[in-house]
Image (cartoon, rainbow, N blue to C red):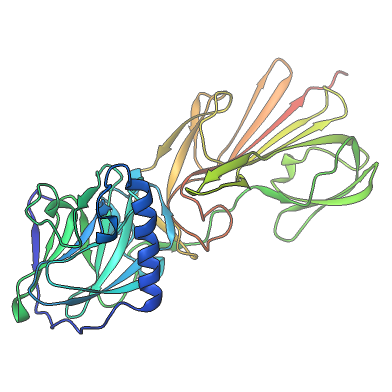
Length: 396
């Protein structure tokens, strides 16, 4: 944006006069009701008169009613990486779903996002115009209105609004200078490269407690390992997706498993919800301290003082997975190595009889994460898999 309102002039048709559907109206009023409760100390008077507070608006500055259809983003975003790249990363219609249809009277405003805690995006559809992808960053502050009417003369409001101006055949859309607005083509081919989701390390099955022995070990057709284990509770199976050297135990060996998977406490404004983190860490230790030790990190997303000291996005176009997630590859600095690794790279170092084998699996920044994606692609942020195997030289 160049700091002035950019105008896109197109021939427009008159509003259809369609009314807000009952379902859309109820959903809209629920959002307004939550807003009123949150702003009551600040906006005590006339909340039923529709005080709006939003970081982005659509405004009907014409003299006629207009019908507006909103499509909502069905994905998480990494705000830092999507900012100023929304045209590249979000211009795919399969990331959005219909949310509501509104009929706005002349001069009215429509808040596009009532939650100003993060960045956001919608598709705005108006008959006679190209669909408009509207993105706002998490650096913007909310603007309020005293009524349902758009305060077009209010400083800053126009910069954060998509405004329909003019009359009849001479209507135009003015794009607020602080919004990223992209006119979408009729078709929706993505400019991003469709690639398979990255091969990740991982496991399935519940690691048994206590000391167990390896009954069986075989490599499956997909390269993963099927391991049979015998413990105090009987026999069990564990499937491990690691290279063969990532499980340095043979039939008859004994070992222990320790699993870490933190709990996450989320607050939705009403209640706390406890879920399990996508991050998991599996430790494998032989029966004695001299036996091999394995650390398997899956879906790690934060820096770690012991191993992961830096995530660096690689400067290249984003890739789009088959489920619609959009990712940027990461270089990961592994502290014990004092160097960066790329996905798939492995390094082996030896010192004083100890050999440590490092391998970086999946290493990418998910910048757009559709909710329906599997395998850690449904949450935005860094996703890193790391395998560390330590073996000690046996005395002769």
